Image (cartoon, rainbow, N blue to C red; front, side, top):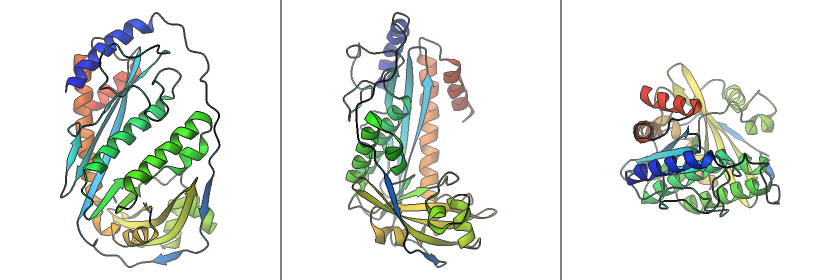
Length: 332
């Protein structure tokens, strides 16, 4: 936990430096090409057969929290890999503590380099000119990449969330469009050629399937209507962004009060179709695959412990927003 003590020194320095600098101006962006998302759904199938997976299954999930202090926003990213092969961050070698300075940073940090304070893709510091959400996403990407690298490739790995975030790259222009394109490349590099399946649980703002079939306020509503409220699957919907492609199926899984819909994604068509037929057999009463639920619980508990440790060790008080994150950690 040496990173926490290093962070204490950074917080002290940032708190003093923040009072000496002028407020930042507009955020500059590099020129970059826009990425469009192309979805293909010339055909889709509706099926109701489901059963167990062919072999062992691992789960991977991460959790990030931002704790705001006066001069710096601290990004705490933790994660877990569960199954026959297991690992956690912190634990595996990873930079899991990020710092985004709330002023324009000149030069480097006054101490060390174990903290994630500079984009590995854009070679820019995480300071007031760098979008906080993008910095958070980069730290999370790194942590999940380390965990995926610890998996030996046997069986199947279920990752919480999409295999890559297509819309994020398409919606952002300039430097951040380029950054999220690099994120996609990194995910494909880490997952390509391996049995990795993404499971997306939040579909209330997803419209791929609804647009394809012309029915439903969102993808969850469309899938439930097509499946008539029964356990089953519908797909594929193919999404292409830049030179990358993923296949997606919508799966109604049993839950405590009927069924819930999740989206199953893979970089290979056959794997997506296969996973759509067995993911329901792994779900808990909340409709979440058990390996992912276990990894999520571990990641959240680790995160809460670290946030409480940072608060106890910090020489400066967090902002009100930061205090909310600390209070949430104490409730966990």
